[in-house]
Image 1 (spheres, rainbow, N blue to C red):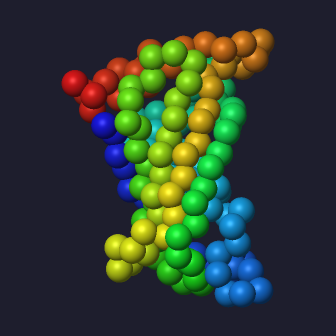
Image 2 (cartoon, one colour):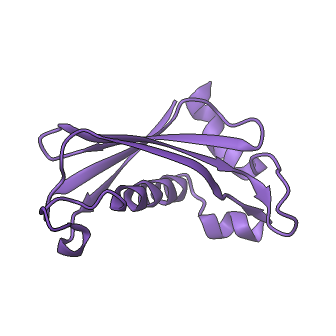
Image 3 (cartoon, rainbow, N blue to C red):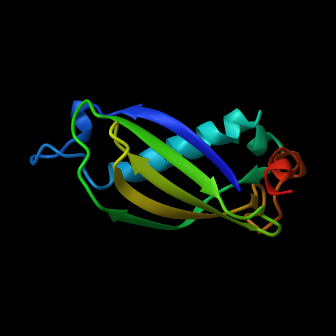
Length: 136
């Protein structure tokens, strides 16, 4: 299993009238964690685009358990339970506060697609090689 943690501090503009993080912002937190996890492996989304591969989001889910508030330092955890072998990659997420309390869980399904044709493709070999050691 591959797991990676990213820290994000809640900005005032991300909160709603109730003083908690607006529900839609959690998906942005998930995206930051995905991008940073790939960067941690030595690649970027831009690198994959140069390889001719894009990763559109196909499905998202989020379950809100406790509120996050302005200035909270959040840990956004990303997990891959399986090494992608076909056109799909499923990222699992957890968001925790500084006390280690679970605030939200989520799942994001993306497809690997050829940038030029928007046809499904498989995981780029360079990314597969970076991830493989976590699944052996």
